[in-house]
Amino acid sequence: LGVLVTVLAAYLPARRAGRVSPMAALRDSGVPQDGSAGRVRAVAGLVLTGGGALALVMASLAEEAAPGAMMLALGVLLTLVGFILVGPLLASVVVRGLSVVVLRLWGPVGRLAERNALRNPRRTGATGAALMIGLALVASLSVVGASMVASADRELDRSVGADFIVSGDMGAPITPKAAEEVRSAPHLAHVTEYRALDGVRVTLPGGEEVRHQAVAASPTYAEDVRVETVEGRLADAYRQGAVSVDEAFADKHGLSVGDEVSLRYRDGDAEPLRIAAVTSKEASLDGGVMFLGTRTAETFVPESRMPLPVLMLGKAEEGQESAAYQGLKERLEPFPQYQVRDQADYKAQLREQVGQLLNMVYGLLALAIIVAILGVVNTLALSVVERTREIGLMRAIGLSRRQLRRMIRLESVVIALFGALLGLGLGLAWGSAAQQLLALEGLRVLEIPWATIVTVFLGAAVVGLVAALVPAFRAGRMNVLTAIATE
Image (cartoon, rainbow, N blue to C red):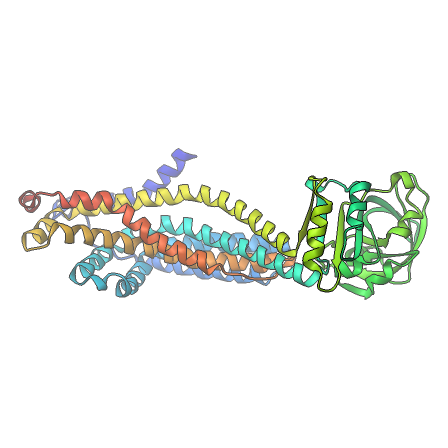
């Protein structure tokens, strides 16, 4: 695969070189001076970019995840290839815009750097493309990661009414002794126990039996976790002899409030229960499960089979949140396998987890950025070799060694910023489309991490400076007379 990619990458340059006539090759530095993008290439790039943008919009508007994901992948591919093809055309426009802000502050040296960057737009576009790809991935993943955190924060604020959540390491159940310590903690208005009943056998009104996930909890769970309903009230499902079903389950089996189903857990007896509520399929917390009260569960779950609580939720007395939090921590000190967290702790933990995941991905993308840096180095080194005689003449008429090195550094910076600008713009579009698609799965808040975007853009300038170190040093060491005599 590596050999094939290398051969394909060399095909177009080799074909272009083969079309150069011998007389043109002998003239000046032996390279064609026409660096403008071909019309066919530009038109193809614009068409692909437009098609990719349309695919991204369609992915954003998709109502189902599978076709939306296909449109997103198609949009990413088309816009990426389109930007690579249209890169030389964009280089002529973007570099001039960046030059007004960055290069012209440096006077004549800055203007020389601008003209050198514009001398061969095709080369500038190809060089910036490598950096563009890496930074587009960084930007898109940053948008998705920030949107994940923002969506979870909003969902916690909107859906979780409990002040504290007690849980075990790796989902370990809470032992009776630890549960008693939680219940006896001071300044708590109430404590809710959450038990997961896996593989409950549900007998439908028609006699069909299916398996489903159920949650047995205290009636206060309806206050601690606000689950949306499309029919009935969730609080009614915690009454004796009642249960709730989720919307998808109800639609599939034709159930509604008032219908009767029988539940059986493992080797226990079947218990007929009345459906008191239908929870929304849009619910992101505990979506797709049946809710019932703990006392109701005790009627069909044998005592020896009753699962231990995997979560305990606590609500503090009015104005006693800090005291209750401290009291819970003290009560659980003998049980290091259990943690008590408030909403702020959960949000911080989520940010840390997402940050760790993104850092791993960024580490891999750093390799692509290193390759892009080498591309900028090669471009500048080749440019210096091609301009050896020109550099000698500029040095002869008064350009200092320091100004020469600054010119090459500025040229490198503007090329790097060109790639960064395209990459970040592309990445923001990808990330925004991905967030809109993931809204189907609960990622409903679009969050643009502007601090990260600005940092990456400024970091691209640093990348440009680093890439210019060796070419600028070599250009500064040229002998003026030898450079002028170069054919």
